[in-house]
Picture 1 (tube, rainbow, N blue to C red):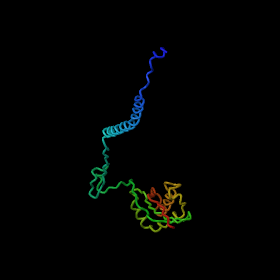
Picture 2 (picture 1 turned 45 degrees about the vertical axis):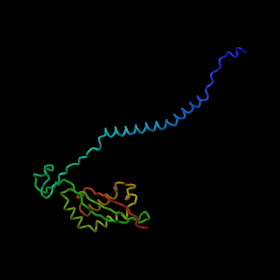
Picture 3 (picture 1 turned 135 degrees about the vertical axis):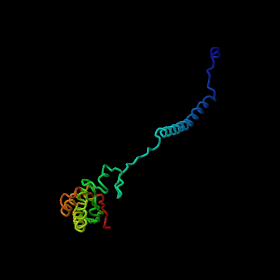
Picture 4 (picture 1 turned 30 degrees about the vertical axis):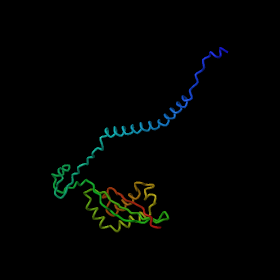
Length: 201
């Protein structure tokens, strides 16, 4: 028994040590998300500040200076046209004029659509007056032919589905205008607006 009595007693953990460890881990786990969140907020603030300092704000946009020739010839050089006199127009330059603006029906899909159409023509300055007077003299005939073209056209080619560039409409209108105005006077037909509206509700 003496051997048993002489053996040193194993150190038993004190009752207060184990709960203290658990409390320390629990406190760390509750404080860790707060610390990480704070670090992320500080990092975001620093990142935004650095980006603002480096970018320097929006850059100023500079527009092009346009030289226009008015009635007073104030072009200021305008590509060398100033010495040729006031109101000089380059005969090889191009001009765009309105051929027709109208609404035309189309019923080929089974529903009635009104197409709000605006058609311009591009002509050389040397042919400008000839084309203007011909378009003005045949305004009703042009309206009739454009209405017929739109009424007979496939709606998918007019609304941009199959032909986003409205090639068929342009080609047909150009053919009719060449017949009325004269061949070769019109360089190109432009269709800036062709909007379908439902007419049968």
